[in-house]
Amino acid sequence: MAGFVAPVDASLNKPPKHEDKVDYMDLPCPIPYEEIQREALMSLKPETFEGLRFDFSKGLNQKFSLSHSVFMGPTEIPSQSPETIKIPTAHYEFGANYIDPQLMLIGRVLTDGRLNARLKCDLTDNLSLKANAQLTNEPHMSHGMINFDYKVCVRTTNVMQMVLSSDTSEPVDQDIRFLIGVVLDISGKICLEHGKDYRTQFQFGNGALFGASYIQMAAFDGGSLESYGMDGSVTPHLSLGGEVFWAGQHRKSGIGYAARYETEKMVATGQVASTGMVALSYVQKVSDKVSLASDFMYNYMSRDVTASVGYDYILRQCRLRGKIDSNGCTAAFLEERLNMGLNFILSAEIDHRKKDYKFGFGLTVG
Image (tube, rainbow, N blue to C red; front, top):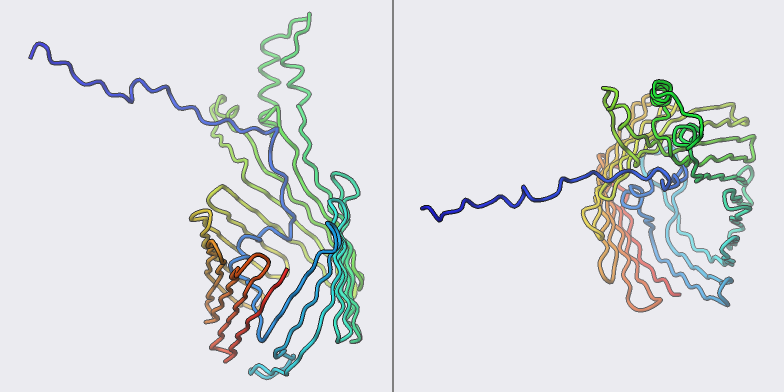
């Protein structure tokens, strides 16, 4: 037993783990306010249709392409009856697309007289102009919208950091140096080096419609607070924003707030508005190919409540999306790649409460 040596725990020789410090000089730029739930919408709002659809697109050069679409199937018409009323329709759509790194133009014209146009132009590195319009033969149905999107991903260094770290010939009193640090922390300037990343949008539309939104990365370093005996945390994944709008034609206005928390494995969002809408969504990224989503919608004025769950499954040759909600409505959407440039589409939606059943299939070439 004299030669027996007790085993040494290998974990004792491992260097202590250090948490990765958040690089506030490299924060991501927030997404647009209206796209705050885009991951959930991909699974819970598939573009279902009913009937036959055929889409063909051909590129004339690297920037310009043409598209042709044919649709045959029933169309729902507004009715006060609880039962869904549909009429058979068919139309042809011709489209032209011009796509450039700084300019995008998309136009569509249909045989029923509708004309749709979209524009996106990057005026500067930070400022973009977006516009969309629809012209139709129906009275009071034509509309237009202009959107200015301004994003800032500026990396700044706090002036006080330069003062505290500067090598000057005149010494700085240690008590004054400590006091300046405390004031900076308590005033919210916890990170002396941080990135000011935000996005703001202004919208103008016909009918005296005006809107504005603002969203910003809400990241802060609580390490300095902990040094003064206070709790702290680090969260570079949180975005906070708000919006306001005014519809002059209908004499209505509103204000809303939103929050988005995103990591590599999940995305959680929440929205509330003065119109009565409360929306929550959660997306869990199971893997690179599988995502699960859920949402909760509540209107505290009409007392309507809806909850739904969905999935998004990407295979080697196809993509399958589906959802089911608390109203008993089930939907599924399948995109199968048959060959290079040839896709087959299947769409189905069942609503037992309204006795509405939809089934569609189509082909996409190009």
